Image (cartoon, rainbow, N blue to C red; front, side, top):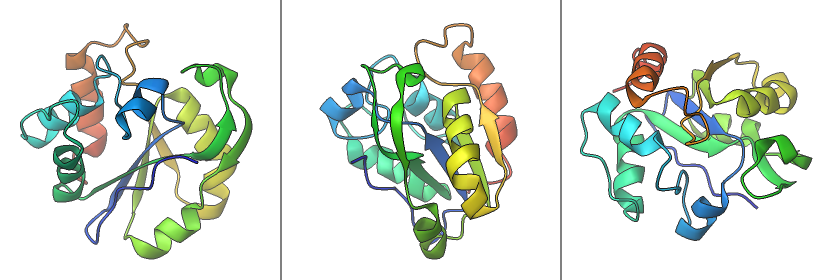
Length: 161
């Protein structure tokens, strides 16, 4: 099973990944790979200090204080390492249950695979089209942190508290 969603009563925008990486499993929380740019990016977009890698509560705080929610598209799957391309036997999370508990108005997918999985499994249930954002993964080296900040900031800007 994947990690529980992070959301609160002010969560207007949902950020979805595909499935936790092995490093995330080791950390016990989303985007745990030390080279993943997700947390430094969110810190930059929100004006928060970048959380230490092991500080899960600081990471939760960034999400909750700024009207965001965080989750993965898949509840379970078969995967080799961190290769999204190897995902098989995909079972989606219950997006309807989350939407019943949080006022989500927009969905943003971290990377192409999260977007493909969302469109296939979740969008028919949610009815909310998702924006595909460039992946914060270290494997997406073509995108610098500055370029990611520009793209993500433009997309998330209207939803950040």
